[in-house]
Structures are given as structure tokens and as C-alpha cells.
Image (tube, rainbow, N blue to C red; front, top):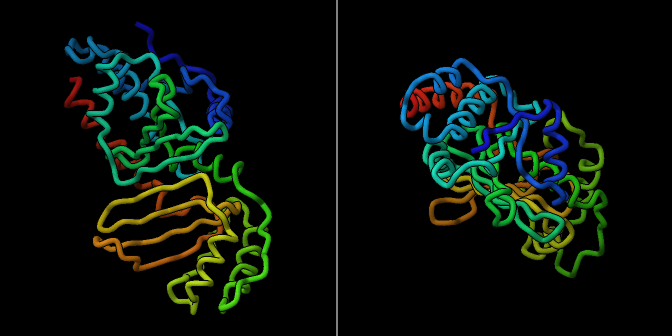
Amino acid sequence: MKTVIPVAAGSTHRASSDLATGSASIDVFHTGSTSALADRAWCVGDERASNYPNATLLLSNAAAAVRGQRSGAPTQLYGLANLSDGERKLIGEVLGEGEVSGVVALPDGSLAQIRESVLAGIWRVCIGTEPAHEYVEVGAIPQIVRRAATDLTSADLVIGTPPDGAMNVKPVLAEIRERAKVWRFGLHAHIINLTLLPMSIIDLAFLQQSLGNGPVQLMLHGYGTCRVQATGTRNVWSVQFFTSTDNIILDTLEVGGVPIVALAADEDFQDSAERLQEIIKAYFT
């Protein structure tokens, strides 16, 4: 059985770029140096470590990666192509399912499914239906989300003539267009609270029509539900919060990068590193 094969650090961006264009054959990805945690997992005679060596190594490397991860840093990817069905099941058992899930539409018409684990900042990503195109990713958000939201959206927002009955949509669209043009990575997002604006149903329909539909949809489930969608206009996102009965309580547009509500933060990485270390000890030592 093959082990997880490391490739050069710095290939992460190339790999995620290939994924966004559908040109990659996902097999192996960057792995950091194996931590003392991994050494311990290999040395003990535990049955799981013996029977599932690839899963053991992958989890150990992920634990080391998330410990050193930062919100603005490149993500790190670990392919599952060389894992047995039993090892995949074990990975799923350990990581579980967290609060954030979603889909990303790709240029070839396929969909990428993403799911954050119970450990914030550690994600499962599957492109299409092939098990070989599945991987674990450590980072604030899977890179494929950022790439699709950039590469598969339009940089130009054309403002047409609003229909009869529109009230305030035209100045709102003008504000969005100007903000979207000047936004750069590292700048704070500009938030437009549609809930507080005097917008008619006609305004909102024309606003949605003008912005278009984008390639990313994320759902966050916690105390309530939050839906984050990329629009068809680059750097413009719809962020809506719902009650438990599916009523919208806050409807906003964010001009910027991936909305912060969907991102893992630095403190999340540290917490996840500690929790994953405890899980690995329980499973493999």
C-alpha cells in the first residue's frame, strides 16, 4: 500500500489552481514535516496505526499543519486517493461534520462539495463523484472557493434601466460597482444592509438580476442558519441570516473577499490543533 507522498512546499497554489480549472488529477499534495505526534503514532504497536498507516500519517500531518496555520496563509492539501475504504471511513469518523458546508460550480460543469470538519479550519473537499478527487484541506476556507469566486465571475457590473416601480436600486448598484472595482485583498469588506434600506420587491428582484448568480454557495448551521453566496459579480457576496423557521432576519451584501462568517480564524486553528492531538492520542496511542 502506498503512503502519502510529499511534494514540494509551494505547490499548494498550483494544485488548487488546477482544481479550479478541472485540469488536475488529484493524487498527492503538499505535506509538512511529520511532527512528534506522527512519530509516536508510527512507533506504537496500536492496531489502528498498523492497519491504517496512510490515515494515521495524514491525520498526524494535518495536526501539525493546523497548529502552524494562519488565516491569511496558503492552505495545505492532503489527497485521499491512496487510502483504502477503511482508511477513508476512519478519516470521516475522526473529522466528523462541522457547521459549514457548500458547493462550488466548476468550469467543466461538475460540482465540488466542501464540508468543514468538527475541527474548524480542517475541510473535506470532493470534486465530482470520483473518490480519487477527494482531499483534506487545512486553511481558513478551501482554496477552490476563492479561485471560483475570482475566476468564474465578471469584473464588470452593467447597470441597466430599472423597471417601473423601482425606488432605490440604481444608487445601490452604483455603490456596489464602485466598491467592487477598488476592493483588494487585505481590505475590509464593505457591507450593505438591505434589511434597513427602503427597497421594494421590484428593487430587490432587479438587484439580484443585475448582480447575477455566482459559482459558490455555502451554508452555515449554528444557532441559526446563514447562507453565503457568491454573486455573478466579482467581489460581491450575498449573506443572509435565517431563523430556525427559515425567515430572513438579516439580508446583506458584502463587497470584498470570502465573507468572514465562513472563514476559520487564527484562534480556531489553535483550538483545532489541540483537539485533533487529543483525538489522535485516543485513537492511536
